[in-house]
Amino acid sequence: MDALRKPSRPSSTIFTHLRNPSMRNILRVVFIATLMMGLMANQTLAQEQCSDKPSCWPEGSAMRTAFDLKDHLDSTEKTLAQKHQELLLLLSNAIGTAKVDGRVITALKAQQDAWLKYRTEECELIGALTGAGGSWPTTHALRCEANHTDRRLRSVQSALACVAKVPKKSSDFDQHACLQQLAPLTNKNKKN
Image (cartoon, rainbow, N blue to C red; front, side, top):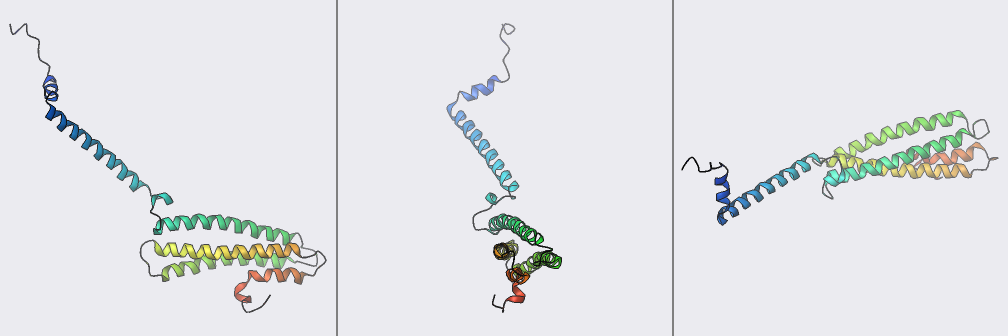
């Protein structure tokens, strides 16, 4: 008789346990717990990998603020470079007239390069002097750079607008007066 009996399958005992309601509940809880741990591990891994964009950091944190300031600074620096180039082109077109000589153009280029270096070094000192910890000194330095760059952009735009308004028959002193605002440290006590 035993020979006629169907061989039992090894997995049938697992299914037998599934018929028991309490065992099914236990397996269900184990399955859900395993699934939740897997999801949490994925979320933790995703959080650990996210550090290169503002949305990775909480609002108001040093890193989030630094990312926002860096975006603003990059945009403003690009505009500043464009406006400075426009100013140089406007002045270059006047070379050979009584208005501008090449020395002014060369001096403006050198002064812009020096200003960029000064701004970076000055703001690095400002960030370091805060005495803050973590990423905050860098964030303070970026805020300083953004503020300086905003001011410089306004000065370049103002000089550009002023030079563009100078009548063609005017002397070079009229254009030079427009450019004085680009040297605020030297001219800070002068009234334009």
